[in-house]
Length: 112
Picture (cartoon, rainbow, N blue to C red):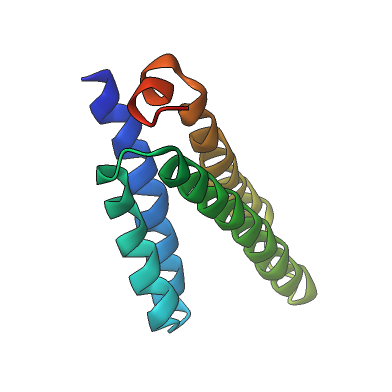
């Protein structure tokens, strides 16, 4: 059950990213975001590294998105704090999900 929750959080991060890319009409990046979790079936060290790198890049993308939309709202005189909090939590989720690969069970599964 614990392994299922760990893998589910990884999948959730990539589905959120796919939805983000879909909203921006970036079909290729959306498809890649949907396909990356399928690497979890391949239980090697390189898989863990690839997924961690993708999660870090996703976190950076969410930071960029937060700053971009907050600037637009500030320029238009609209409230921006709630947007920053929500997207900030998505950033934290992405970076926290990288740490899942530091647990004993994930290290054993991906031979780290």
